[in-house]
Figure 1 (cartoon, rainbow, N blue to C red):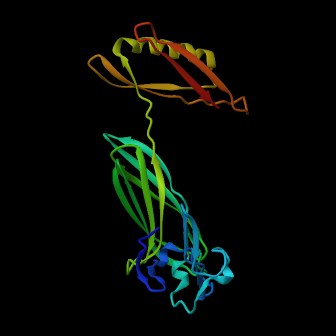
Figure 2 (cartoon, helix red, strand yellow; figure 1 turned 135 degrees about the vertical axis):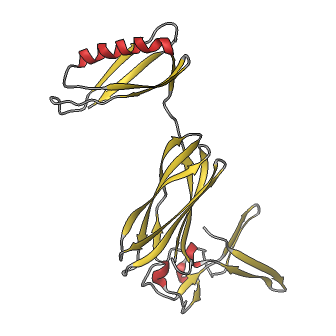
Figure 3 (tube, rainbow, N blue to C red; figure 1 turned 120 degrees about the vertical axis):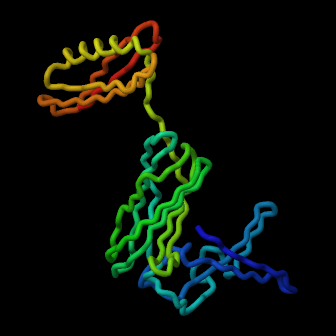
Length: 264
């Protein structure tokens, strides 16, 4: 998850390749060895060929090329992140996204860091930066709220851990991210609302006093109303969850039926 730069040249004996790999793309263990092994492989399927810089198979670590005394602060690069989780809500014509990522400091000592989220996709982009102090070997859920996007869809979420002073990046991961939003909005003609109230009253009598629900009717504008139903059920008797399904037939002029599911 980073920009890997490389240059190659053809020589009389084959090829010479120079590759620059950022440390923040690697899984570095704090307190680990500073002597590392590397291997570089090339394989093709047509024709079927395989070449490795190390002698033997490409995955035999004992044959890897040795690089000794890598002089970097290993603990600074000792971070892990998890795939993000999202929750979405509508705000006017935009989407508000709450993004949560688990971040782990693998070092034994506390570290200050900036946790940087970047979301990029067809429905826009959003960024958020959260400064935080992580205790040694601590895992924390870092949450950024109300990131604004234009539309649902497929996105990329880039998570970066960097130094709060120098802004040097010590860890970066890119995750696929799907932003879904499916609001439940029902538009009713104005003359249906009295029938709806009657149906709710009948349901209330059926469930009894130990259960309660309510409905809110919003903003009647001309002959159209936005109907938002919220159901609350409280049971003082039953300990186990139950489901009561009530069907409200609104009338032939709407051509619709509504199903309300009540959970304890």
